[in-house]
Every structure is written in C-alpha cells, then in structure tokens.
Length: 174
Ligand SMILES: [Zn+2]
Image 1 (cartoon, rainbow, N blue to C red):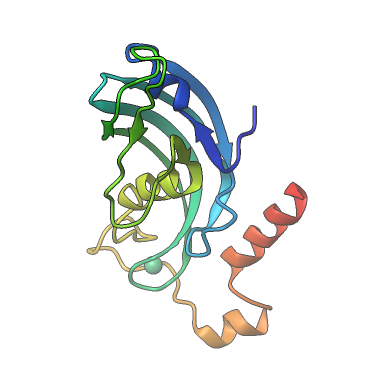
Image 2 (cartoon, protein in one colour):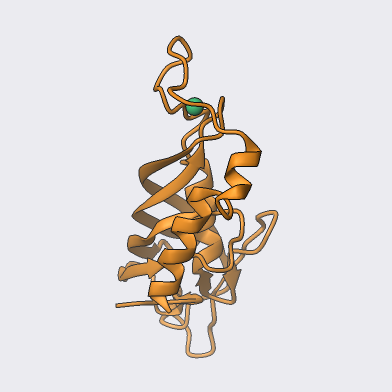
C-alpha cells in the first residue's frame, strides 16, 4: 500500500495501548537533497502510553552518494531503524467523551500535523542520520580511487551520471 503525506495516528493517540501498523513506501519527491535509486520502503508502528506516542519504524532504500575523495557516484543500500517518542497532551477520547489528546512536537521543524505524522519529513530525518559518511569508491583512504573524474568530462556527457540514473528512475515512476 502506498501512503503519501500524513500517516494518521489519531486512533492510537486517542486509545492508549492500541498499536497501529502501516506499510510505507515513498519516493521522498519533495526532498531535493536526497537521491534515491529505489523508493524508501518499510513499516511504521505507533502506540500511545497516554503521555507519549511511541513511533517505531524500519526502512530500506538505495541511494547515490559521491566518493568523498574523487566525487565518483557510488550506490549504497541503506537500511535503518527509527525509534522515537513524542509527548502527548490532553485526555484521550477513550477516557472522556469530550476528550481529545494531541501530539506535542517541539522538534526544530514539524513532524506532526495534529495527530498525523508527516511521512516524508520523518523518513528524511531518519535517512540523513543513516547516510554513509565519507564513502570512498576504493573502500579505503589507503587505496587510491581507481579513476578520477573531472567536472569537464561530466558536463560533456550531459550531467552527473548519478543524476541521469535518477532522472531515468523518476521518469519510470510517473
Ligand atoms: Zn573515489
């Protein structure tokens, strides 16, 4: 099942102890600084303790990064797990007929719209902290890069090879 935009977690927020599970697949189209070769796919589960909404997730995807030394594009499989809790204020509606509990999100940028989790923003946060750091095409600083690529040769071929692959991928998705 494909879900874009908001993942509605209100049922979990209003019913502490009730666990919701969602299958997730997103291309992170809005995130211009992220180059995905495959959709970000996985699952999200959420359960409220009454005071906090616990969100767990697991995702995998394939990304393009540049070699930290020569700039050669490299492909990486990235798999990661997320485990967050967000404070909840108010009385869940299962405890009081006029009750309404709501997630309080005090992150630097919003992850929730009322009790809907902003999927792409949430996935982006997890992906960025799990990106390969200082990737090298030779696998080691002791081994030279097999080839060095100049900007001139990239431009004469019509753009960065990684971006061409990405464009092809995107056009087949639409
Ligand atoms: Zn390299």
